Amino acid sequence: MRLWDVLGLLVAAYTAYAAFNGRVYARHRAWGREIRRDEEPRYFWVVICCYALLATALVFLF
Image (cartoon, rainbow, N blue to C red):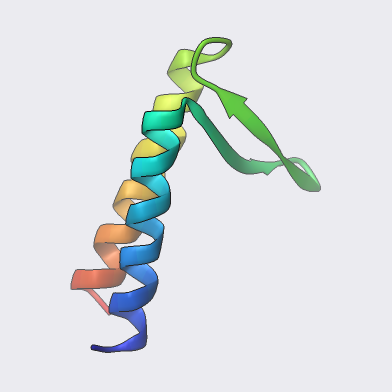
């Protein structure tokens, strides 16, 4: 198993955990912040989709 595959699987696992948990950490301005599904549902799902696309790219493209 290559490094990119392992990294992609870890990102996918975090994405699934965050989607189930309802909290995800994403970059915001200089640092980052936690986005909660109940407070900002649209932004939460956009971040989850971005992480899912990243995980897919890491496994299949690299």
